[in-house]
Each structure stands twice: as structure tokens, then as C-alpha cells.
Length: 216
Image (cartoon, rainbow, N blue to C red; front, side, top):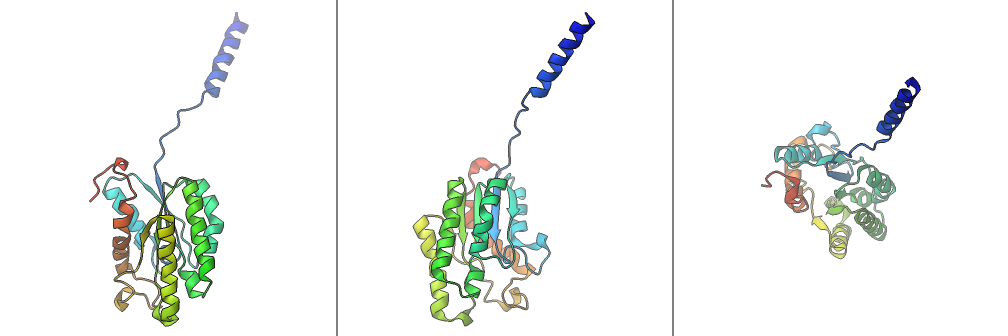
């Protein structure tokens, strides 16, 4: 009798251990893949526009987790090297691509940059992510021909790949010296809400109302 009770206890215990727990609902993720402009270069990270985005979503009751995978100095090639791992780890519902400025500052080929941006978009779309491509203009000292050609790469890629597009992350900011750090390349803390203001109207359209909260 004792042996029977012991065997019954062991059987029930093994059954309980083998039971698969109910999967918890996951919070949709917004992944930002950018360079120093999104990595809060020269600032405390919580002052950067990506952190301000996370706060805005929280205030509006929109349950998104924001992952900032931006790295200062990153190029489109560097972002492409890291992309697969980031997609696998975070499975973002929305991916913001803010890369290319360092390609331009280094005078890299437009064709290479274009190919990398297309690869970033297509790989991410294959992983079921919605894409927002964000462009940044180069300083005027690079010459009109190069800066115009550089900007055209982003516009052409966005149109060809049919993705949401912010044509100028620093619109209304880069031309105001009081909103730029001493290096003339990176915005100050005071500029970060304006940067978010440039991104938000386009990003908001990628966030379905079913995510919760009231979109304003």
C-alpha cells in the first residue's frame, strides 16, 4: 500500500513538472537602430529623444517597449551586421532606421549606402517589422552636389521600398546654433523634444489604435 501511494505521488509530480506553463502575453517592441543622434551623444541617455519617445508612449497608455540599439559612429554597414541578432532577440513590431549620417561624413559610396539601407529594410520586413526610415542632412560644407545626392538616397529608397519616411530628423534644429552642441553636429538636450516632434507624426501612423490608449 505504501509503495502504491509512493508511485502515485511520483506520477502526479512528474505530470505537474511536465506541464507547459501558459505563455504570458508579450509587449510589442519598438526598436531604434541609429547612430549618435539617437544614442544621446554628449547627453545623459534619459534626456535623448528615444527616451522621450518611451515616456510619451507611457503617458498615452500605449503599451510599447522601446529598445534603443543605437551606437555612436554607426554606419549602415555596421547596422546591417547587427541587425539579424537584434531582430531575433527583440522581434520588433516597428523598426526605426536612423543610419547613414556617418556614411556621408566619411564620404562613402551612395550605391553602398543605398544597398545597405535596402537590405536593412527587406530583412526587417521579412521578420514582420514595420519600418520607419529617418534621414539626416549633411553639413553644407560637404558641397551642394554631394549633400543633395546624399539626401536623395534616403528619399529614393523610401519611395522604392514603400516605407514610412522622416526626411529630416533635425528639421528646425541644425540651422539653430543654440540647439547644437559645440561640435556643430549633435543636438543639445533642449533640442531633443523637437527631434521627437519631427519623428512622432510619422511614427504614430505605424502604431495601431488597438495598442491601447488615446493617440493625440
